[in-house]
Amino acid sequence: MPIQQTLSIIKPDAVKQNVIGEILTRFEKNGLSIVAGKYLFLTKEQAEKFYDIHRERPFFTDLVDFMISGPVFVSVLEGEDAVLKNREIMGATDPKEAADGTIRKDFAKSIDANAVHGSDSHENAIKEIMFFFREDEIISKLEL
Ligand code: ADP
Ligand code: MG
Image (cartoon, rainbow, N blue to C red):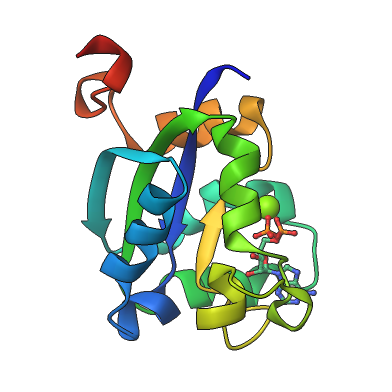
């Protein structure tokens, strides 16, 4: 499997629980490296644009309101098969269905406040990384 990058967002519910460090540690313990990161408060416009693919879904407005309910921690994770690996570490969208030991099982309260976002494909990872980071803000381990 190739080395990939993927975008992670630690959502407002997890930031409020003060578990940014614990969540980042899970990525690192599972072979992913944090190669870019920023702590920020999304604007409504940013949240709407980021989740544009869900614009027609009934939960869109609630999702946007939730994502701007507090600060988030956005990072770029790098490692072998990073997109899929991050999705495995995250667990299912609905924490009730998330496997034991996953982030959502341990930190998410509900399907809308579900602790983390992770890109779902290599193509979307590239788009999502570019949404938040300039090229010079990402320092790939492959360049060191
Ligand atoms: P994932 O975050 O696992 O990739 P989706 O891309 O399907 O899941 O949905 C994006 C986000 O929208 C979810 O993480 C969740 O916060 C919210 N969401 C998804 N489905 C629902 C739902 N049925 N009700 C409320 N919120 C939802
Ligand atoms: Mg998704």
